[in-house]
Amino acid sequence: MPAAINYSGTSIELPEGIKVDELANVLQNIQNSGEYRYFVLDLPGVVPKRIRLMFGPGIPYALVSDPLDGHEAELSDDDLAQFMTGSGS
Image (cartoon, rainbow, N blue to C red; front, side, top):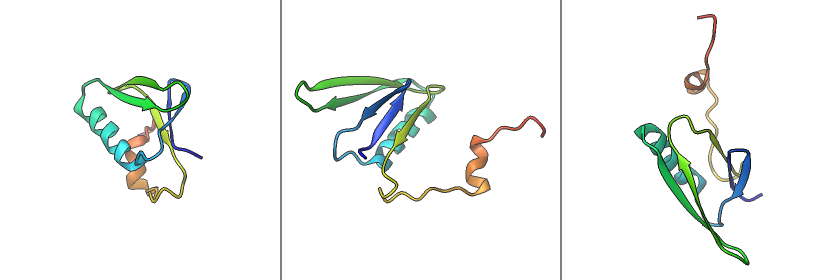
């Protein structure tokens, strides 16, 4: 399975050779900056395409890649706490 970005309900296959962990760091830095920026991808194919995706605070997306890409998920309570909200605290 090739790596992809799920953005606004659409799965966009990433070009071969993109390092998903490095891309994740770039997108996280954009989110943390508090600014909105375009990320430009040139997609190969019979008819090559250039797409521009807006990233910034509050814009949801997901990076999907093969679990064998060398990245170990960190699933401790401390690691997940930043993503959890509760109504009873």
